[in-house]
Length: 98
Image 1 (tube, rainbow, N blue to C red):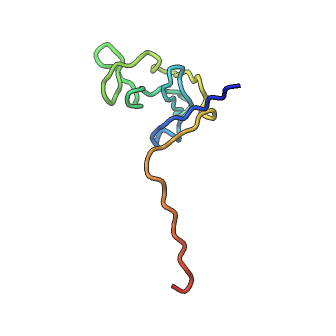
Image 2 (image 1 turned 180 degrees about the horizontal axis):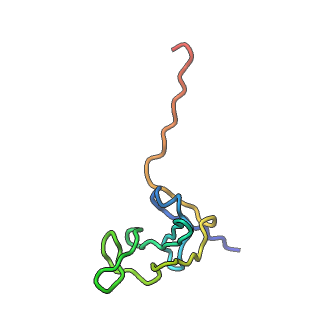
Image 3 (image 1 turned 90 degrees about the vertical axis):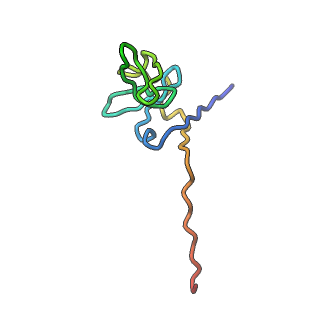
């Protein structure tokens, strides 16, 4: 048996709303029961530019899978999530009598 464990990196703000991944691997967030697929380039929402769908951050072209509602292919509980940044520092214990 082969076990494949997914690990996905995302911003802390996205983590709280993370619902899973689309079939193509884009992050899906859940905001008020509305599933939205974020763009693969910038993990941003989509908008219309002229007549095409594009990333709201870099204005690169986006696929139609980013239209509402998004389809979750892999649910969040099956995915290991990584949030980049510095780990929190532990408080050092002060010695008694110092």
